[in-house]
Length: 395
Image (cartoon, rainbow, N blue to C red):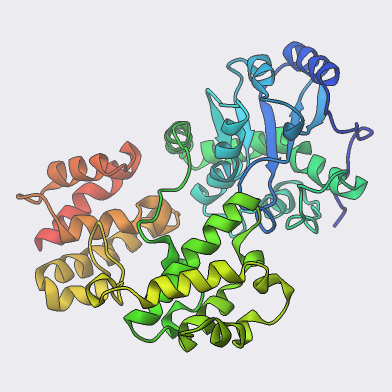
């Protein structure tokens, strides 16, 4: 399979006002949709800011812009006007693009469209292979894009991410039309315009890898205290938290619960210069956790704003467990009938919420209204409301 390559020589990264003004002028005179992508440094930096923005538009070509060199990129936003944006996995890039003043008025997400088509591989490389029979290199996907200057091979890799998005969009849309899913896709894309980022977790420290190994509420308190201390340090230094103190080190300290500076210093977690650099912070965090009253210790299970995990339903609310058990196979069957992944037909969380806290009278209208209120799209409700209502009501 041939490898995708650039169709024109790679330009240098735009990082001054004159170069940006020239790009704005060329893009303003170009035509058609705008293909965009952004590169972050997620494995290296705390922030999710964009460190490179790639743009391609017919009649103008490809531009690589360093957003860190400018206060914002609103002039580019104005150059795009109301043109449609083409993004791949839009939810990954929309927040960081908005940070620099780039906000779409219309968009097409090739990854989401691939999901609606139930394609087996919806990553950009997978779609390029499926539609264009070409391979797309992805060897620099986890690179530190905050590096300056950016190496030439990285820049070529980044430019390729927008090289064929316009052609890909046309081919994906043709399949959406053939399968009768264009209206569904348009509704999904419209909903993405309001996306600002994933919802904040109420207890983010519980994401600590291996948390199940922490025994007892006091150990959990130490994990929590160290997690928030590490998060504060990482945010201040714009370094990904795991590079400040690994999750494994947090759990080691929690397991030993050292009651003195000497005991903490002798833990395996404090070996090496990195962890010891913030030794006083770790010691203060452990002391704070050890001094907590019993009533202030975290519980072994996470508090939930919505329903608890379904495994607890049979005991706490058996009628809800029965509703969920009847609804799940119905959703699976509907997804198969419409050639969709179940999670794209309807969010499993919405079905759980509905089963846990249903309308007073379970029918197609009330179930549809409840799903719409929780964020489901009209096309989803049109497919699932009546069958799910019938299943949950036992009809």
